[in-house]
Length: 289
Image (cartoon, rainbow, N blue to C red; front, side, top):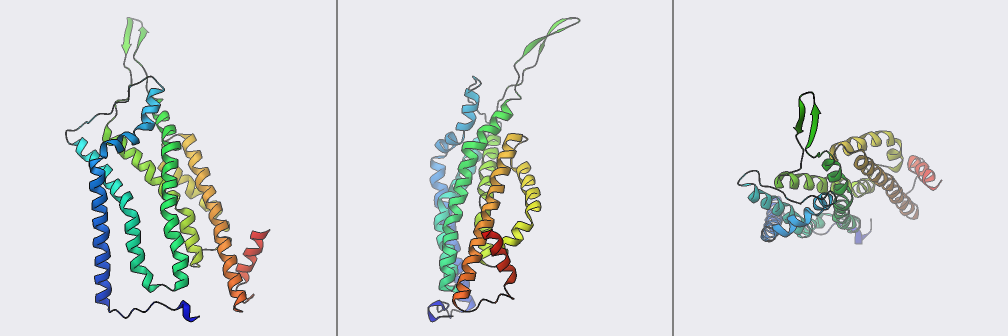
């Protein structure tokens, strides 16, 4: 290993490392609190933004978009829920920076260059998944749920006509917000799959060959996630399955690319052993084919 790839000098004792960790955690918590306070002051516009998919689905049915506070304190807890989510979103860049500043001194310079892109890609993929949930999945889900409404009507019987009860949506603001946040967070986490698997591939914990061999188990797992993360709407479940499975296939290609780069580097340094790394070489040939 070259001198430029040495670990940064750090002779601090354990107590000093713990002090550094405490400082980073305090700064992260303060960033979260600041973001939470900011979002609390504008929780109403944020809530209005989150209700757009529902309002569009109701407008398509000629209904007013009204949500209710079932309990006296519900409005306050709606504002708190939005503040917690907003505080995490606003504070995430600073929290990630604090995490990076804590772990960076213990990494090789080459490891820093490998880890930093994943630190940037993770929030990007989360926001991509959240946007997909907001703009694609929630309109489909809310349209499915609202389809169970029925207007009141007269029903003819042996003793004359009677009034049948109608079913009309009169939603709780808290219940709606919890459902919407569930969709956004679930899809944001699902979109972390390529980042997670590629990072594990770079660390040698998974291989492209192994991921290809577990496709059938991945399909079952993705189907279960699709059933849990989406409503009982076949269209939403199929969309989530196709998207997440597509991300799984993309992850295989990214891990294979990492393995090819590792092999090229080892060959250039004269450290590649075809017998020792035979499985990786076979996997590379499968990828090229």
